[in-house]
Image (cartoon, rainbow, N blue to C red):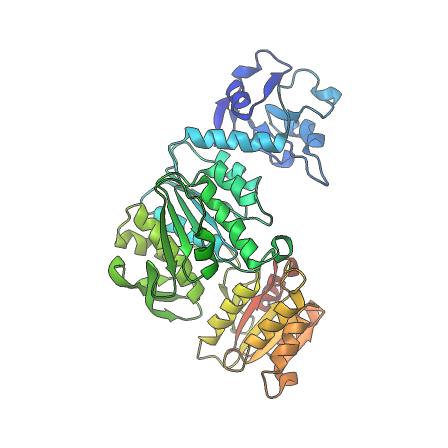
Length: 469
């Protein structure tokens, strides 16, 4: 974590110290934006949002151990902070947080891998970190700290001896990735894919592509840009795009014409295996996670590892020890022994089709269930997109489909058309508990259940209930 004198902190974030002329010598050991989670010696950074203002909790932060606080110049000082408590005055506390993180990143001898994409960025982040950890001291984004506040906090949490940091970069609007990449200054930038998430804000998949390609704005000269070569929009988006000097562009994906491609792919409910195609030479890769889409993510991780000079054995060992963030095709067992796949972290048409394809490729189960919730933030065509998912399901891919939510009724309606007796195989629910009770009444030990939906639908509650005796 950042450890600097208060005077150095002020200079790094463009602020001025108030209240104590001797305060500049105070040692700051880390930062926090949460007054309830302060550690002694930290700097409190009060963030002002649309519906909250961290300045109101500055006194609590001081009581909790903060030795100083940032303070926005347009905010009136409460009496408790008018004397004695070291303050750094700034024009905007969020921008000061970002400026501090950028300055700290520049002082560190660290290489950065930036990961963005509509789907798979967290899994790819976890894979890259797992591989590089076999040779380097690595830090990665914690959870989904991937926005304009979370990424700066991740940078400021870095220990000075860290050699590589793997940063996830999320967005919902134009300009957000541009900000994050300029803060992070990645040596390697990865775009996992282009889906339909945030269509409401960005208008089209072409708009999403444009927003994701903003990651090149902060790429270091001579850096590596890895793109999913199976996505034509990324190829098109690169045309005419000004890349940093000496940028190398490599493609990865499931199609054979990519620089990094896979062959001999074998997938079951909990693992995947493949060979890297062509002269890249890595053979017999074993992943402790299912899905051909995760094979694609693994190829991006392998390409990154090779850029960092890792050997094939280190890469294999890294995958063997891979621990993914929860609810990414997370395997589990139901109360009666049935196989559960928890893919409930989020959902978009692209990721739901990938989940359906995974289930379609699995065999040896009495009944394969798809339990699907609403996909959110898809824009004005959301009903049609849900219907397209339903049309994508047929008896060769799954045996039964249960849906939860108003939008997912369109999945059920279209899926029913694909089955001879749709009413028996497809059911739509607006009450989650009714869905759970119906599924528990019909589930047998030899079945497999995959559960997926957008974060707001909290589909993991279905998994948790099925795991209870």
